[in-house]
Image (cartoon, rainbow over all chains, first blue to last red; front, side, top):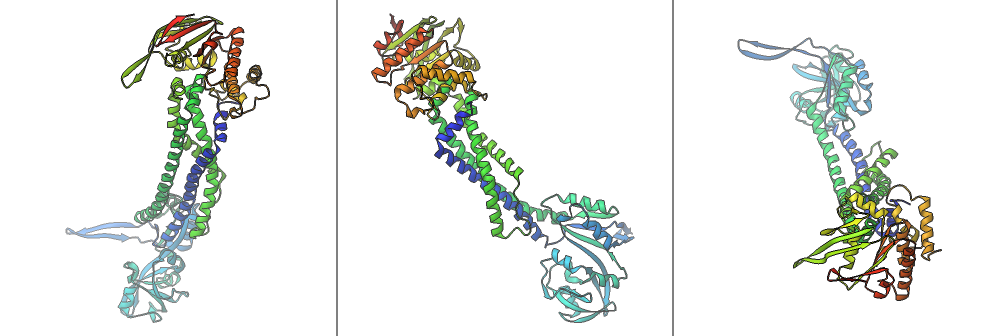
Length: 387
Length: 223
């Protein structure tokens, strides 16, 4: 029997009140934990969906530029010593980074110009499987190529050449057929012919070479800078840069979802704290005689403060433990209902549950701090005379 | 052992400060039984609260073993209440969710250290002494009013205080039980415990060595 006996026995004796408060606080903890799990999975899932709107890392050879001006006329920057990348070595290096699980697509490209009849047309060699991951917004009349001698025409090129889905053409001496025509995108893809990378390498006589590689990385689990640094470490001679506008635009959406859920969770937590705080305040008023008695027996102010804080601390710990378990179950259920998990379902983590229990215990104690301080300030005679 | 010098106390009221005690002085010797009597509102309970350090006077001093205890720091006051003074109230003031034994042990439960075994043994002895053998584990709600007051007295006894302050200890009891409680206080006093009892019943007060009659906040006469 010690100081803790008092809050424990009081909680047991007033079990309906204790149960109600624990339930309210456990509901707060459940909501927070569930929202945490859902926001993590939904954020990840959202980011995977956003990768369909472009890459966020560009890997290219270091290019030297020369500013040219003559007679006061600026002729812009000239690129010289254009280098190419070895496709197999570059892709293998990128895929071998520690954070490779955060890479959703690695899309190499080789760009050049080829004569189609009398017209010079830009041709971009791509790997269509990777390209479709980062450009899910493409709408195509026809199909994506399944063979090397098939190409996709940008909308503007198709109109310019007067070709459509199923047509045949001579591409720099290679007979190819048009597998599909892209609907206008408003971007560079409208004005190019997209060919299989192998065909492009043959056309430009650059076997196994690419100009640059676009990488789509998932940044919700780690900063983009880490992924860029790891790729740069594997490819020391190359230029690896994050496309900040893409990264930030994408992360803004992910962070919006996460911040929204955090804000909702905080509102729930503050409400639960308010309930605990008000309930403790009313308990202090109800138990004035008890406080007066304990003070008359020589209990210090700190002792009285500790009794009320311990009561809240115990309540918070129990509610936190229950909330961790219930929150995990609810979060998992919601994720399954939303069909947002993909391959990653929330997993139960004992350490996280312990941290939540401890955190909720501290939050409950904080919520009870004002009523406990009020109780500690009560003078024994005032408490006893008031009755 | 205990001396009050020129104690004054007022309570705030709508019409301004209302004096409750005016220039009250008294002494309590070692092992003495002092009864403070008077009508309701005469200031006797306020005086008892000041003597037991539960209330601070507006003016005057309370000396315990020669030391002024009216302006002691909070920690020293708590230590004094824990160690030397015991208070029994009219309304028993038992914690309803603790057993009789736990209520008696309350003075030893103020910290995180468990109550010592010797204290538990003494608490059992005190309960037996006040006639509650076999009822140690009962909750207050399952005890009669007289039995609850006995638990409160056992709680006052358990820490072997120097002075027992009793504020109308018979006030909520029937006359028979009241007499038993006063008899118990007399027995304890006979064993050396100094007792200050507030009562409005002159019959009970006559059991004390000395009686202080309060009228309008001041001693009327001493008997």
